[in-house]
Image (cartoon, rainbow, N blue to C red; front, side, top):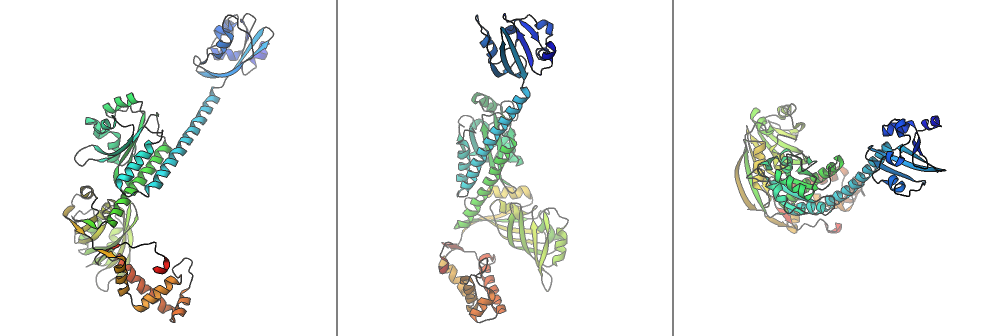
Amino acid sequence: MDDVLDGMTEGVLVADADWRITRANAVVEDLLERERDTLIGADIRDVFPRSAASTFHEHFGGDTPERAAISFEEYFPELAVWLRVRTTVMGESLAVYHRDITDRKELEREREDREAELARLDRINDIIQQIIRDLVGATTREEVERMVCERLAATDLYEFTWIGDREMTGDQVAPRTAAGEYDGILDLVIEGGADAATGPEYTAMQTGETRIVRHLVDDESVPEPVRREAFARGLQSSIAVPLRYGDTTYGVVGVYATRPDAFSEREQESLETLGVATGFVINATRQRNLLLSDTVIELSFRLTDPDVFFVAASAQLDCTLVVEGIVPLDEASLLCYVRIEGADPDPLLEMVEPRDGVDAGRVVHTATDEGGFVEITVSASSAALVLVTHAAPIRTAEFDRGTGLIVAELAPSGDVREVVEALGEAFPQSELLSKREHERPVETAQEFRSTLHERLTDRQRNALQTAYHGGYFESPRDSTAEELAETLGISSPTLHYHLRAGQKKLLNAFFDENTEYKRPAAIDDQQPRQNR
């Protein structure tokens, strides 16, 4: 009989009518760490370990216990294991079988944790995606920041959120908006005394990288007053995410939670996506405000820093470089169209190749004498990129033999000091020459059309109107060039000539920076096609 019991994979104890152990197998010896001889004759209720819920002892304890078949799975603290326990009645004897199921329970717990985390991540992603969709309709930076804070704090995932920006006069992050249960602790986060400049939000602002605090109470980078208040409130974790667009940081969002280790890698990625989207929308609202503003702030800068490619190139080639057009390719690179005077284009392009942050361009055309027109992409060491990412687009830019003069425009609501300091930080030899506010002349939609009408010849106008109404500009085309040419009674090459000449005049009216800019007023892009 003992050999049979020793061959079983379960632990087995057999007790007689007096609850005394009569048999025990080898598995029991290993589990209880007791020799078999010390178990025989002992009361099974004294020997069998007590579980967290004490199910075995509750059932078989007391003055008049009854033998019965039971089954349960519980944690046994004394053994630090999970056991599956079952009993069977054999006459007046009771057999107790138990199996170590700790590995299975660990796998189940890990699976449940993963499922809970995935459900939480799905919920977080849904919340963040909805915020991003709604941000598209925001028209001011204040509205953007308020929406982000309120939407995150409205969930039960986070205790409170806040958005701050760098103070210009000190080493602190000044709050712009907050939401949730922040009374009494946000002031401590901001006014952290000597530790404020090492706090997570300030660090994220300085480095442009996310900062996570896994244990608020124990992390010494968190100011001491904040740690004490976090302990009192049950706050466990926090994350500080920079609001970035390109190389520009528009602030930082701090999120605090009562969950320990709340911010997993995927949750961090989701919040960082929100940080990038928020930075993009803040930049877009600035650009929009500039576009729609009747008044602009004009900033003039002088640059002599040799780290600026066009400054260095104009000095080395002893020439003048005039930036005629700038096209943003993405948040970190600009396509520049540059007119060169007093030197050939080829030496300029040769200077591009070994320089970091400036991609090889191409010659658009070469002048009959010295000079030409080139295309160059810049992604670093560019004053234009700094200004554009701070919502201060370039009006004019000219570099003459080592000295650059740049004129940029900023919306009245823009932060002049922020722009000047950003340019000065990137290029210490830059200098603000002037700052002036001026009105933009407003032109009605009819005046705008009348001006364009006067620029076009009759043949150009007829060719454009015929092509437009004939669906030539649709994709796929409703009419071919040959069909339109036959309608007008001209050859196909002649039609192409008039179309290209007319299109060039229309584009010149829109893109030509050498003519005085007039913002069209009330041009309705939703007009019916037949009225255009």
